Length: 296
Image (cartoon, rainbow, N blue to C red):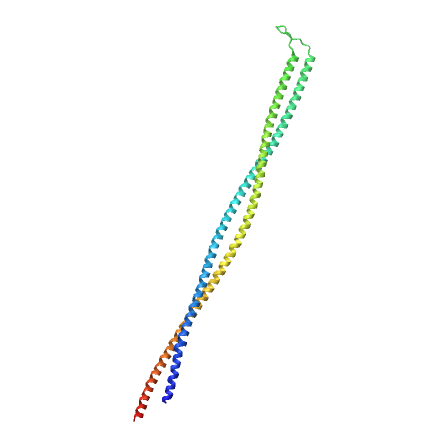
């Protein structure tokens, strides 16, 4: 029985040494180190996702500002185009009025020419009647100063006077309408130049508007892509964060389980230690008894 107890004591000492030197410290240390490394890795991943989210948010703000600038430029170009179109319509109305005035003035000039021709015809007819009356009349007029009245000279003077008046009126009318016509021609040329310039400007504005529309569409597509990327990153970040939290909870549970197992092993160790002490005491007692028996 003493030998059996000694063998059992040696077995327990061996188990205790192995448990103390290898199993407990190594297992507890490896579990804690593994959990700490995994938690650090999850934190790094979370920090990277947060940095990426912040970067994408900054890019979204910059893109939104760029879209607003393009939108303002587009609205300004639209307003400029509307203004130019209104000016073009006003110039066209003025040109139409000028053309109508020109036609009206041409009609008036033609009417005045016809009236002048009519007056000439009337004058010729009246002069012919006066000539016929002079030929049919054989009246001799005597003055107190004994001078004959020269009717032919008077008629010629009157005729010259009428012709001068008619010629002067014609020249004045021609000069007035020629000046007016020249002014209208100058205005017409100016309006045509302005119209051509406005057409060129409208074409340039149309090209700029098309370019801005393309840039705006591209910016909208970029914003949409960035928003989609941000949503994906947020979803991935939320999933990663959720997974990290779940892993953290699992690790905490595993750590608590390991601590509980360690406590159980410590209790087992304490029980083994108590058993060892009891066996040591019992062995010492048996040795004392054996020594007493041998001494007798």
